[in-house]
Image (cartoon, rainbow, N blue to C red):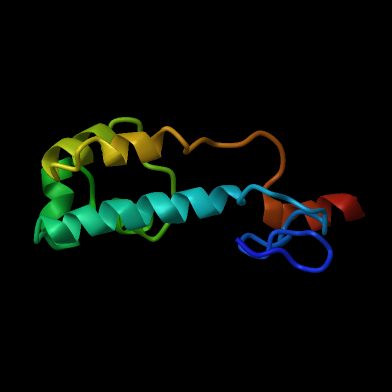
Length: 115
């Protein structure tokens, strides 16, 4: 982990938080990491998204959005995916760190300040 001259963590930066220093990632970082984990195990199982989607019980669009880190997975997605992909509990463990935060979305904070 590297730190900038102002003491901010350059791995995560200060984007979307009004310029204040943070030592934790923005929520979307966790979604992207979760998506990469699912994608890695899906590829390890030699499944395309088109093949995996009906097996896990969700649409191709949902699976794609989850893997791209654009949406939270439905509550049972992690359990189904972990079982289907024989992921050793990794997907379930990663899902524990996903949550919808309270407050304003980081992209909206600047506009809220103007109000």
